[in-house]
Image: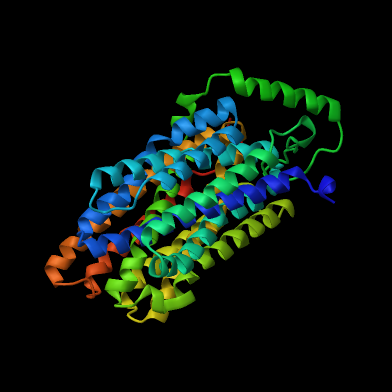
Length: 444
């Protein structure tokens, strides 16, 4: 049975598990550190600084990650990423009073994980045929949301039953197990597994598998693969491309909203709505579970529209990106209005779910326009997303500190209005930019 199971499916499944584990780690750190920091009397502003340190390291390694994946292969770089952050968690104690150590450790984890997504997209571009890319990327990235949901569900109980430090050890164990499996069960793609597709005018390079001309294709693929190792990267063309900037801007907005929600939603539930994460039970994981569902729905819809030729690649990417971001913007702006747990969970679920739907637009688009440089473009795009994390998480901490001074505590809805208004407005403007400047056609 396993000999007939396509290797590319195993690759996609393992990359899905990798994003799942990494987002268990990110949400887990936010919850475990917040619990430890609150017990130590750390201020909201200081918590924001520690939480945002990860993104400084993450930003530093995005473009180098794309370059490394291009030169030595995404498989090796992804393995190195997992081993590095797992070892860091295995040996670093969680102590909010040792600020320097926490900053350095969190920075190192950010650097290590920064290599992850450029490597994954480089691996998927090698293994996955174009007509399966939307579903494959959507499934892989949906692991982030399922991981965040699992973290929200499980980590508060781990903290209560054991300790915040135990969360570190559990996450290091998960990372180590995945690294062993990836090392033993994956490889670089053989010539017979390399993606093959033909271009149909107006529908990009995402439709039909080529059935003839096998020997010619193999020769062309071999030449292209060799060129990937030796050709210089067209940095000037990349930085001057408006479609690439459309991807970059939308990635910035997506991650600004995601990281603010991921790092501060637990605080909003506990201090804004006066709820206990422990008492909320499975309620608290619904927003991230919704992201998982909507991300995969977006991928299936995109591939259906393209393969059935109902819409061009360009129209499909614009439709899903715009509809996802506009609905998300409305939900984000409305979120502080709802003062019950049910209302807040529904509103945050709509916001995060439709953001995930939008990923079937901008997040796959770099594979449409630059499949050969997918890792590089993803590195640039994710750098912008990481800067959004640095700005959004730290700025939110400062906004809440100022709101706490103005309103005595954070239970006043006015304390949170600007926190959710900023990503809501960004969603509107970035979706308009994607409508104007994006394309689904290969430009490199």
